[in-house]
Image (tube, rainbow, N blue to C red; front, side, top):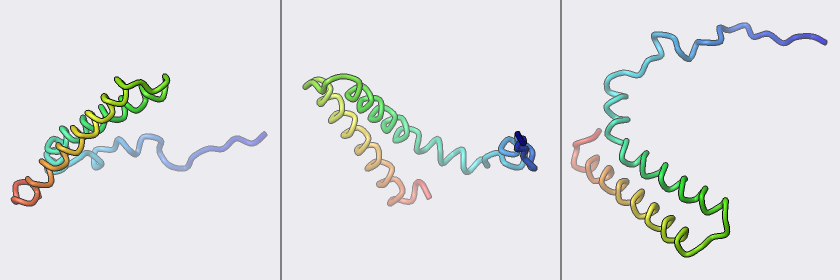
Amino acid sequence: MSHIVTVQEAVTAFADWMEPTDAELAAIELEMPAILADVDLVDAEIAALETRLAELDARRIRRARRKALATRVVLANRAGCGEAA
């Protein structure tokens, strides 16, 4: 049996020069409400997959979709007004 070895360093993704810039961190912070709303939506969908879909699950998914869309609208309006470039 032959072993496969990598040529590159295994931790290149964590090199100092790969850190996010302040502008990238600010952009992530600005989009955090939308990211969290998307996570809530995925959580609701996963919960619905684990059991038979009940009316309560369907409402939870609809509510999570509305929240995700509303946060995206807020972000799009901010970008349209020049607040977030």
